[in-house]
Length: 431
Image 1 (cartoon, helix red, strand yellow):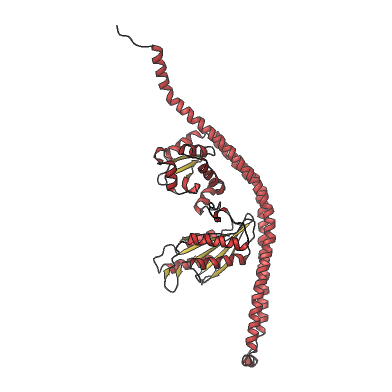
Image 2: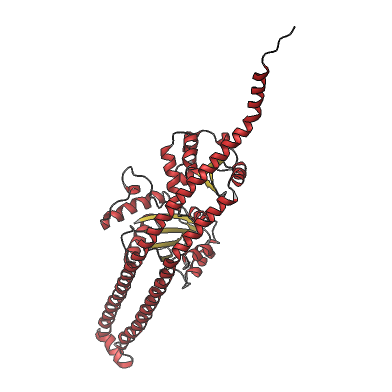
């Protein structure tokens, strides 16, 4: 599975993001280890409180575990990957939380470690953690027999899922899948040899380049949203400068935004609104079906969880009753019978834990099969909507280019009139 990690702070925001069940079908805390608190919010704030005794600002390490889209990872798969990751990073034994997310028929997990060594009260250094996670990702793919993605192959490119939370949130504000936006910029980058060709390639898809205040090369969409060209193209800022030169030759963001605001007429804005409204309307029946399915799945999981908890309590009570008390207990302790009974209880408890874990995994697999069928219908509609947006972006581009040509024509018209007037008058002769 693909492992992506980052050092960070913000315990409250991170716990709220990880427990967000509005954007995820299901959210489950699989493990809280090494914390006094018994909930994720309290656990991460506990790590924050301990970091106050140090000078460390980024006291957490957040790790995402993303299996292939066609594989349903079990709870043990995620725990094994988390164990191997903490060993590779040098975080063995550190307090950690494991949270599982399910969304759009996919299951992935997040692991959050405390970087603060509780004994020495100092942050654990994580040198070259990106390279270590990349190597471990490759090992996990090979161990499971999965086909290596291009980003993990020798000489391969970056993973298509490699976008940050900031990019994701920016794309969500525009109602467009970030993978779609990133593919537009990366495709334009590959097709273009110079800045003009790159600008034309982006303009065909409704993005217009400008000079950013601090980010060098940027692009704006028809709504005025700003995108960093190196970030969304998946390249470094110096690579963009080496390919395109200085951004000083470009108009400013304010200038482009004013042009866009003037060029995109109310009617064209109405077209954009109509497309968005139509897309939302087309998805409404599936959204209702998804809501019912998620509610049913949550109910089934709650019923299983409650049943397993009740059964666990009954089995624990029966195991406890095997240990005699009083004089009989003393005799059992002297004879060694109590020790053998405890070993039997421990073995049975472990087997019961594995049984419950397998039941949960089996239920998840059955539910994910239903969710995949629904997701395929979502994907079919969304593919058509992507085409709609492409056609709309093409129309917007034609409109804006036509406006630009008309502006240039208007600017040149006085000079052309002056030249024509001069030709009509003919040469002057002095007598």
